[in-house]
Length: 214
Image 1 (cartoon, rainbow, N blue to C red):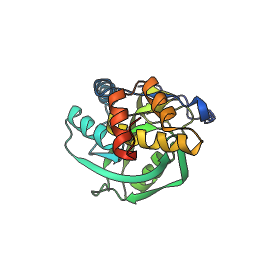
Image 2 (cartoon, rainbow, N blue to C red):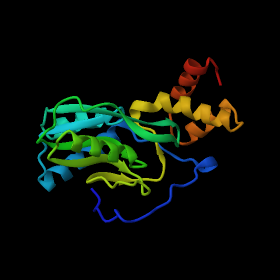
Image 3 (tube, rainbow, N blue to C red):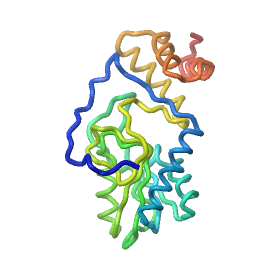
Image 4 (cartoon, helix red, strand yellow):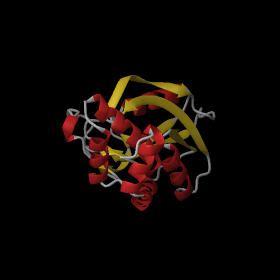
């Protein structure tokens, strides 16, 4: 966990363009980060009444944190924002309210990454309106331009993170992004593989999604 000394810092969101870099953690690396995250939460002595995972990226981390903290009270909230790799559209919106009552409850919100911070702010506001008495936010990753610094996070990065549970989605969006920039499927394939994504998976997903065999 990093100290929360960045709340007033302003780091501009980079223009990724051709400099788009991926970080591709393995399942084991994610689990190790979540172990550390759970340890930091325990050390802080914050004991939540309920853990809320933000759909969809926060579902698996929230389930694992629920196990590690031995807190089975798990709920869901959905906030939609991203439309593509390194792209966002407008403002996030709550598309599914928190799935259980949180009035007078201490809530631990879990997501995979604090990127723009806008979804986290929206969910925090939503839970406050639902009557939560205290809210803490935990993410695996944090990006320095996020408008909200989580109470707990494990790793800072400026890269686009390809989580194990979204590899096929990332292949689709990367190919679409490259095509939109006048590049080829092969260019997208080479970028993904050189970044560390498994070649066999990349080729399989491209064939399944686009009907092409690179």
